Amino acid sequence: MSSSNAPTREGFTTTLGVLAATLGSAVGLGNIWKFPSLTGQNGGAAFVLVYIVCVALIGLPVMIAEFIIGRRANANNVGAFKKLAPTKPWYLTGVAGVVAAFLIMFFYTDVAGWVYSYAFKALTGAFANADSTQTADIFSQYIGSVAGPLVWQWIVLVVISVVIIAGVTKGIERMTKTLLPILFVLLLICDVRALTLPGAFAGVEYLFKPDFAKITAPVILAALGLAFFKLSIGMGTMTTYGSYIGKRENMPVNAVRVAMADTLVSLLAGLAIFPAVFAFGFQPDAGPSLLFITIPAVFNTMPFGQVFLTMFFLLAAIAATGAMISLLEVPVAYLTEEKKWSRFAATIFSAGSMGVVGVLATLSTSTLSEFTVFGKTFFDLFDFASSNVLLPVGGILICLFAGWKLGPATIIDEASNQGALNNQVFLKFLTIMLRWVAPIAILLVLLNGLGIFKV
Ligand code: PHE
Image (cartoon, rainbow, N blue to C red; front, side, top):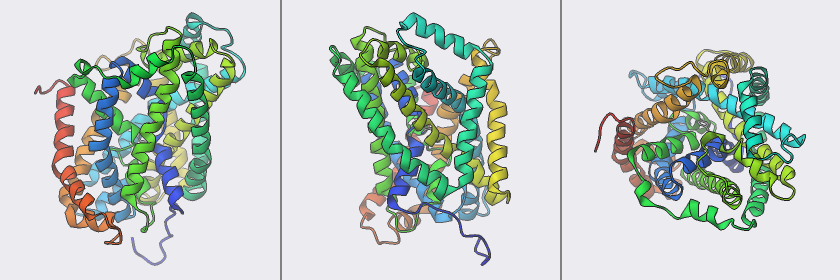
């Protein structure tokens, strides 16, 4: 929209602000909850290796493509496709992204609620001296109850709504810039503690010494799905944030920084968890409950365990909050720009519906635990349908849109800041990745992992 009385769009104000917001979106429960539990379930270092390859070869190009689409169009995730391809149904990619944002939020706010409540419980000493049987009891009692998890889920939604209503600069940028450094410091403290435990090395080996026999098609799909989820790509979060990036910012460099820093946070989280798990003789493959059952028990066995446990859940809460802010911003940007809603109304409506439908995910561990669709509880269905289906499919469409519809000239123009940056060789390589390598790889992994097609 170029009409002269259109309100100027808000945006991120500094290079550091761009990094904080985009990294704040990437870093989340994905690093602290999903990464360790998937690594544990899929055999350790081999999974980590496949994951890193997915991030570098597929995740990074898709992230840059999203930045390009968003900044070029200077619009929300649906509006961006409409602007750049006015006559074509490409905008449906944007719509799918908004749908994915809701699907993810339905279960993400549930787990974030567990994390908030665990930070609180740890602070009040609820886990003091509890062994793993007791922490398992505490967890199953908690997620098996109705009121507690729902109330915490809604508290989470209120917190992020406040940030989103405050706006892109004063809400998102300021919040992530303040919280990310705190998160890093807390994480490093937990790492030092875990790595100095006697017997910690087994955990380090588990993360870094791959057993290649463990790499199978479902393992690769899980790693790819995690790469999408982790980097907040395939559904328009980075497109939306890209539209807030200033014309002089170096987007490819920012994407590389985000991918590297985010992977570092995952590895640091793994290094805070696995050495402790091994040092105290726990099993690494507990899955999603690793964070909530094993970790409190593990931290209890170390000196000042309660303090570290509180810090650990606090940092998880911080991470989850930054990620959820970016998820909520996707529908909010869409509703304010395409439907002309006020930011307040768009936030209340979006967060409200997440709170209502999200109940289905939250009750999946209690009242609705027996209720399944395609053999999955609502919680697992929302998770699987988003990470392992919608995000990869969205990723393919984003690659094709950038690579073919926008094409090399536009990619190079936008991502080199109209030639001001000397990165043309890299961008030519990026175009090949977007046109061929990434979409074909994603498709093969997707079909294979879903068991539709076997190579
Ligand atoms: N990247 C976030 C995490 O790892 C989750 C997320 C997914 C955020 C998709 C935005 C979009 O926790």
